[in-house]
Amino acid sequence: MQNKTRNLYLIPYVFWILLFVIAPILLILYYSFFDIEGQFTLGNYTDFFSPVYLTMTLSSFWYAFLITAFSLLIAYPTAYLLTKLKHKQLWLLLIILPSWINLLLKAYAFLGIFGTYGPANALLEVLGIGAKQILFTDFSFLFVSVYIFIPFMVLPIYNALEKLNPSLVDASRDLGASSWTTFRRVIFPLTLDGVKAGCQAVFIPALSLFMITRLIAGNRVITLGTAIEQHFLVTQDWGMGSTIAVFLIIAMAVFMIATGNRRRGI
Amino acid sequence: MGIKGKISNLYLVAVFIILYAPIFYLMYYSFNSGGAMHDFEGFTLEWYQEVFADTRLLIIVLNTFVIALLSAAISTILGVMGALAINHVKRRQVKQTLLTLNNVLIVSPDVIIGASFLILFTIIGIQLGFASVLLSHIAFSVPIVVLMVLPKLQEMSPTLIDAARDLGASRWEVLTKVVLPYITPGIFAGFFMALTYSLDDFAVTFFVTGNGFSTLSVEIYSRARQGISLSVNALSSLLFLFTIALVIGYYFINQRNSRPKGMEVRK
Image (cartoon, rainbow over all chains, first blue to last red; front, side, top):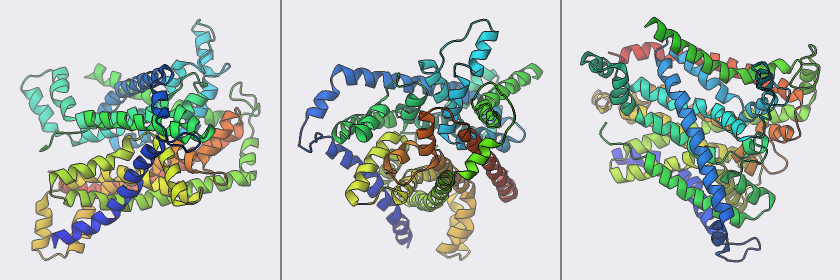
């Protein structure tokens, strides 16, 4: 009897996995062995290990790391303080609200804010630093990316903090731990799953932010995402695009193993 | 405590200002008769008139919302089934495999999802357009719903189900009267996350959208690449107001549904 229900739930779900998870990965792998004329080749892989692609890969990872680190630094205290508020559900919604505003609109807003005559430069003028080129720099790219990812980092951390049993914190305080020790030894370890989920939700998408590199960084920053988009939609070289994608999938698998595997039995 | 409280309030206020400033900045300049996103010259509704006169844009807005609502609804159903399936599986290895496969699309970069779906749809022969965009939005929303629902299922005590069974409930009744009410907050969270992802998605849609069909993000991208036009500002202000209305609605529904229940569960 138990068996029958289980199978019924599994059917649509497994169908979804086969069609949209397994098949696409296999197709990417298959296409990575073909050149632009549809001939079988290993050339895409040798190309990938040329210095051009390797530097691009490294810088792409570096930016993604920076974006994740800054989002976490801003989001964790935010989530923590949110749980202390009176109408915390409402405030949480207000934090998530900007993430419902289309991502491109936010990027677009920064075209104005960081523009030559925008308020960011006006502020610099007032401070006596003088107007600078802000748009199309690494700084603007990082700022806008972190801005976009903050809500995605706050939500899982907030959920983890909410699940945390407050009596554990009280116990730690009663036993004489300072608030910093309590945070470091009790709160943070117990909300690590939320942090990991947040990092997963930020790091990998950060590798693929191709429209922000186009709009805000003015093609100065070329991420792996930009390269794949270029190969698939501009040069139509699906083979090379798939090859870069294969390496991204490998990176993704490594990242998942590193942050996945939560301890069982909690 | 007083100083600490002030600092933490200040921090939250700063985060809120940073999060909202760009949006209000956009809205403010949507009323600028000057035609640029700086130097406010005078008040005008010209850009709003332009938005409402642009039938093509309105169709795109409609498409975007139809896709978002449909994909969120369908992926919520699929995702709840998935979470139930994973929760029912007893063998740890199978469970782990399913979870890993589930998470693949979440950690996949959008570009990979887009590129691989483009290959997939081309091979299956699905025309790029509404169907391909809807299918891909459903596909990448399912695992989010699963992840939102699964923790709720896992924290539910199995004795609740046993009790319901002992008291003579059928499997269907156990599902609709015990399990689903318990995991409702997770389902809501999953639905709204799916909605968020769909409305927010640009990269995947950009790959699978083809020529005739467009969503708002793709349209704004192509407009933004041509430079600043204040009708985009006007459009985003309208979208923002819509989102706020949606959130207020969601908040009240959520509060009415979960408050009493939450109190019952809490010790």
